[in-house]
Image (cartoon, rainbow, N blue to C red):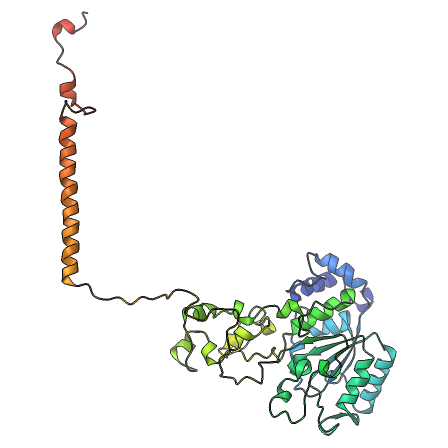
Length: 387
């Protein structure tokens, strides 16, 4: 720590930021203080990372560069050891190729391979070559020597945009080519950088990956659908839907389900963890429907404005009772009948009260109250005490 020019105070602040950056209950931050996290990380060897790009837009890397708790610089300099990254490294050409070969040889069986972008499989090598080698060969060579692989983004997870019809390159994800390898998928276009950060931090702490679902996604970030915590859920339940961009409902922030929002069928944490630490910086937050970018069967396959099926929730407005009621006019006859009934009740009450009042004055009625002037006879002089 001191060798890196970092004070103990700064390191504790950094560990506190790790706890903020891992909001999903990771093992390294579960019920631990910053001091405990610091003690654990101080004993961890920085895992070497090799980051490869294939058919991608570099959006996943750009998203990672925007983290602030901790920042990406802290991550690559103090938590992990980034050995190769074509976008961030200064070298290029032959120098970059030599850096990759050296890193793979030095850390064989120990490094984590991060893959960004899909891999083309049609016409071997015609669509993509790296240093003269087809993309499939590069993945097989480097991935085969990795301890584990993280596929970041929808493209690396299952093909993403390049795999959309007609899929001219035969784009696939890493797991399609290396099914027996230890792989964790972090889909998204781009994924939230803190999901990636949480996975790397857990691996740096104890050498394990988080528990995953059937699609190899970490459960801590993909265990619920966006619709569960969507800020527009109340409008969905009330049946308030945007019908056209710019209409009154859209300006009022109504639900985008009928505009093709895929939130009810998309598992991700976007509705609770926004991008760049700025509220509402995510598709639905800026008035656009979710496209389901984390779902292999949805994103770039289901048309954007096609409404998805509801599997686990009730369709509106059956979810809740209507919030408005239609009222009709009251006929004069009904008004008259109600008036008669009220008058009769009032008259009966008045008569009963008069009878009760007279009963109280009647001495023959048991329990009646006799006025004071009748309860005692006037006293005579003989009854008065003699002085």
